[in-house]
Length: 332
Image 1 (tube, rainbow, N blue to C red):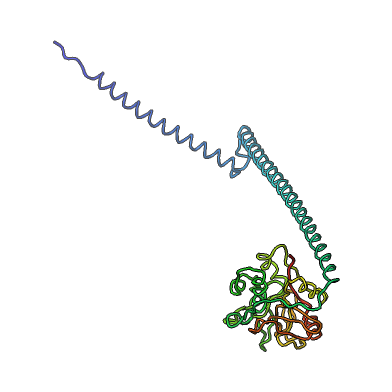
Image 2: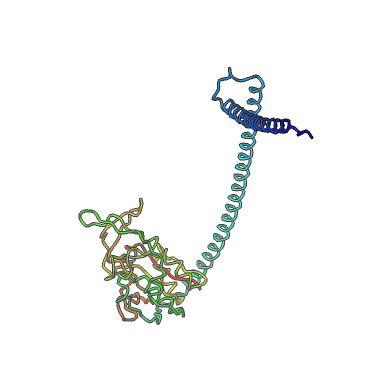
């Protein structure tokens, strides 16, 4: 029996192996060519190759791509612009609503104030006609010392509120009163050149324990007073002296700004708060007026324990007017 030859099988296996190797090489070469083509296209598109190396088709493709990008960018810009316009319109609408609301509130406040003022004027005229020759209110004195070296205004306010039946103490009001916290500054000669404004809040340290303190005027006391007195506190600053007597005749004590010894004030110093020049008298003081008669004005002094101290009316008027005719009371 003849043996079969194995040569054709070996030949087949070798051929198959060679074919596999050739196919593998072809695939790798094709992949490399594709990657190279993509890289070349990217380089061409980015403009790193001059137009002379680009085919017509490639140029058209690049141009189309640029147009698409420009259109996309344009749409994004238009969208952004539209959003900005809408936001602007919304903000303008909100600002208009806010402005109208504030104007309405202002109008209502003005009407309310006008009604109160008319009521006050009517009340004043009626009481002025029947002003009693003498009235002295029974108000317990409160000493500002030792806790509040510079607290004559809030101590006077404490006496007024307690007279109205409000349970309050001077330290509570000292903590609550509006403060102007502007730091004190001196020049090379020790003169104060910058500090707070008493029309904005209490200037300095009201206790006097840690740093200098000055004073506070009627305006910043109004919101504090309004927390405890209804319907309204009344700023009597620049009023005629006669009005103080009218309020006292209605059994409403009056806080008045004078000097601590009723001497005529002299300008002690001045400093600046921003562009405003603040002229001050370091002997400024505040007391609570409790009454009057033909010759005298009666008051409780926060620096004393005595009730209803008195000063002759003409001296009081001169000093009070010289200090700016500052006074504070309330309506019923």
